[in-house]
Image (spheres, one colour):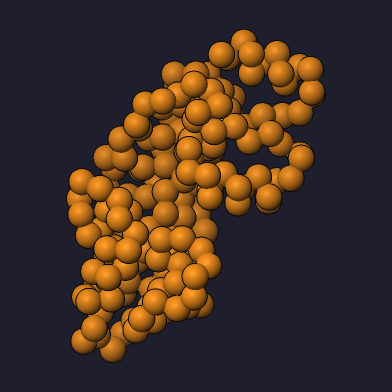
Length: 171
């Protein structure tokens, strides 16, 4: 498959970058940002069907694990992200456990939001932030980036746009 990817690059002369995810929503967001300047490939596009474990205790660590896995196994320039919701009155929780906050063995966005709202029911301080760490590996060099959106957690879900905790955080 790597030869096919390299062949495709040579035919289109468009740079390619693997986003270490199969999350369709994330892929759509990134593709809309970069437009036609870079071809963004998913894990599926490069025939990577393994579930890359996120075992680090930081967002940066998890992003690096995923990016290093792709780079070491496939030799392709890539990036990976990990995002966490950090709530002040919960000492930064859910943090790296954001995706599996309600159930450690599975991802359930509705249950995660319900658990969060229950834990904040009697809290005055609802300040929170989404923090994303991005690990980029290009020609073996590693780069880390961070993005933060500050806001506060609403007392109930509002709106239908976005995914995950989006309807709960208002900036």
